[in-house]
Length: 278
Image 1 (cartoon, helix red, strand yellow):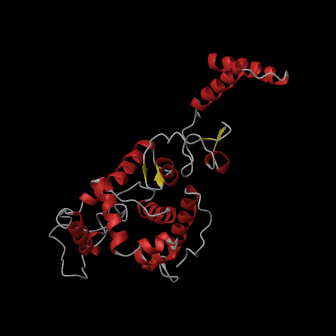
Image 2 (cartoon, rainbow, N blue to C red; image 1 turned 45 degrees about the vertical axis):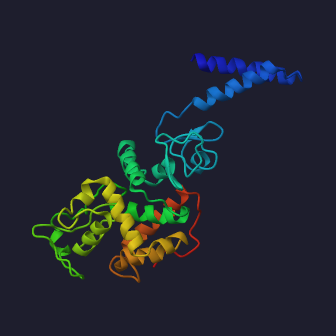
Image 3 (cartoon, helix red, strand yellow; image 1 turned 90 degrees about the vertical axis):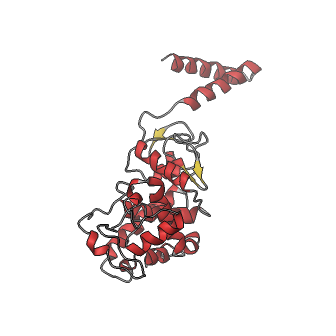
């Protein structure tokens, strides 16, 4: 209450001075103080953004260009947001915008894991493509294990390489990209220096590894190139081809594409320039 009263008083004094055509040094100092006090204010709801004018709400008018606080879209918050830090073009505010259906504590842990992974996207298009797939595969980072697990484990025992499943181990989807099958667990483990064939559950229980296996798949299967060009359809065809060409997973693809369109907004990218449906 005190701060509101002081602000009102300062505002009156400054305005009165301006009406009289007299703007002395004291008035300038008062105006600067008002700006500093207002800039420290924040919205009562953690889901609200503070617009460049100091008002609270949701949507592009509040969370878009000039956003001063809360889950701003993209790199708009001059204070660096609540969590702080960034992974290239992915700052904590963009991450909060993408993964908006989990609580802030869980989101911070996941963002820290992304930071620890050492991966940095080349541009905003690559970041949007990668994170849209992560959102779709993990139900917005709500799960690190495929929902059908462990019952569906046996269906992922087949192998297209010389690597066979370890006795008693299942290779259903885990991690940010829902890594599946013995070959992928083995090859990802070889790249990371971890025996994932014998310890597949590390992909679900160790958040850093959960991220790193997704990055490994992304790179090993040449998804980086099309992602950087904003070719979402090409990356979907690599990650889950059953969704393409009207296949049995087509409805899942429509959900994936809808997520991608929303995630692009978090990076102020606008509508896709390449057809995102494969």
